[in-house]
Image (spheres, rainbow, N blue to C red):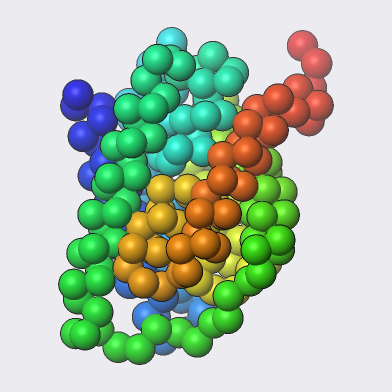
Length: 207
């Protein structure tokens, strides 16, 4: 229960920061803010790792799926963890929405098409899964900044945090991303994470 609570709190924090970042003075600061919260949350989650399980599963639903597929997270807790992260993200989205009229204008950004969203997020989610495994294997948490930076450079600004399926749903709750685009991004992120888990052996040295 404590693990689920931690996951929900971190998802709410990530979503709230991502939503506020879209009101930064310029796009670079917005991307850096999302990258920074991603690295911080990854570090916090890493503190929960044991020899049997990776605490990085607390980062996002995509991380849960990827780590479960390689045996670094229990399959029995996939649904409860994803549910907790989604509830936390939606809560963070509502919190940002409540402040909507007290904050400045959002940065101007267009929305990608459905096909573009699915393809780009799917490909980047594969890379995100590989970065996740590298961190779980001992690489520095700073590498967690790579996926949001790549997303920010590949898609319109509103999709910076789209590699986290829970967060993109939370951002949609805050009214910053259309629901159809958010759901496609979430689905593509989960699928890409699964593919990343299955293909990890292709990009790692043989023992």
